[in-house]
Image (cartoon, rainbow, N blue to C red; front, side, top):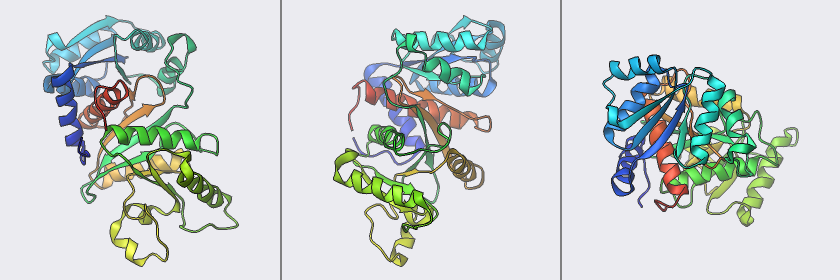
Length: 313
């Protein structure tokens, strides 16, 4: 498949997946949220999902009626307790009724605790990490940023899994060998900044095959990683500089700030998904628009279809 370059292309591809192999079902715990319902309605009308809405039935019913949600594209399961709703969503994913999960009106920690509960069988042995995928007007490709929502600071144990989770997302987007930049404030290994040494060592290990089907380099500053015009001024060569598909941040504060700055101030479209479990989890923030929530659903749909073999890179 050709690489997907914008979030609108991701949405269109999710529609084609449904046309070819059927709509995927998404379980939504605490679905009593107007923007979540609006995003689900748009995704249902476009034809790539059916929704299982878990939460207070009367509240959800009222929201679905307000937006004219097609009644044949959703069902409601009454549950007023958000913890129980999260558990039920995971059970539906465990038994194959749902192929993805979307966060509704509940704390992220409550949902992730359910996802990690052993009895639901959604754990894979990998860590869970968040991948934000942004469509930025001045950039001719999608940009992945990880991890801006899960891990306080990746280390030598968790960093490889964070990279592998993000690489899998970009394989699903048709990028056969994504370029991965390990972000720092500098492009150099600085003796007084141990993390720069760690990133350089990780990049060398990736070059020798520790990370499959990706090109990894670092440390790289953000501008060196993503902005092609700057590469002519660099005093070093890098296969990633100016062309990164994925940037790996050193802390979730850094990732969160970069994502929100691009979204709020640079008119970026955004989708977010948690990877590492047996099903993807579309994760949205309180400031996300209904459109970005819909993009997150489309991204999770494509990732789920890739994971179960419906599509190939």
